[in-house]
Amino acid sequence: MIGKIHSFFAGGTVDGPGIRYVIFVKGCPLRCLYCHNPDTWSQEGAEEHTPEDIVKEALRYRGYFATGGGVTITGGEPLMQMEFVTEVFRLLKLNKVHTALDTSGIYFKKDDPEVVAKFDELMKYVDLVLLDIKHIDDGEHLKLTGKHNKNVLDFAEYLSNKGIKMWIRHVLVPGITLNDEYLKRTKEFIDTLKTVEKIEVLPYHTMGKVKYENLGIPYRLEGVEPPTKEEVRHAKYMLGVIKDVA
Ligand code: SF4
Image (cartoon, rainbow, N blue to C red; front, side, top):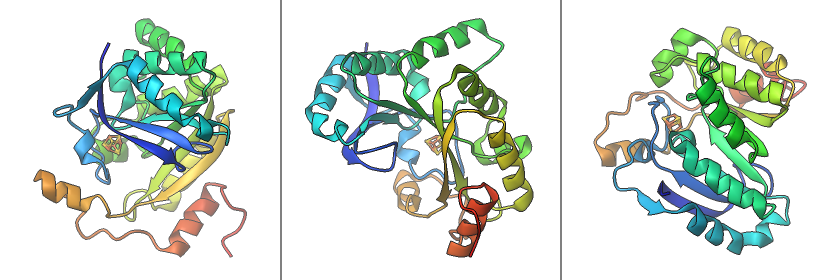
């Protein structure tokens, strides 16, 4: 079995708890307007690795894991390579390594028993899911990512019902997600979930813009500025991350 990999990063501190070995896979079915990794969309030019090789390499960083860290698989969209990711996590759990999966949840289909069975197998080996809720409103989600949000919200409910811990991530983009009605609806949805350990508000930034230029892809958020500190605090307050905005 071979995985299509973009890159590896040893020493990550933003993709799960502790210090982590982070695996970036290649390939993503979404086209988020704010994506800062458009170089992971296509699987062309990917490095190819077996799960065994990856786990062997990750285990060289055992020192990190003692900090409460572990291994995170992100992308791109890891679940475009579901079987590969399942096998990497299975091998990591045999070695008692904490595992985190950063996903959009877009491949979940609650009415398809075959798909659910694959997720059930994967979840045996996942300690934490970093779940991006990109937009709570379906029409806006479609405009923002190119896909509907039903599978994402169903996936969040599935994780909650299965008792799988999750950190919810929400990118704050002026004019798109920075909106009180949407933030309120996002919070109401999150409040229905039983296993959310943390909510992360990620301010939109333009650092990925140069990648678009290099790839010759039009940058569709031209002219959109990152949110101000006050706007970020306000959104954190709306989502219940902080108790007041002062
Ligand atoms: S899901 Fe992630 S990698 Fe895929 S387009 Fe959206 S932000 Fe980019």
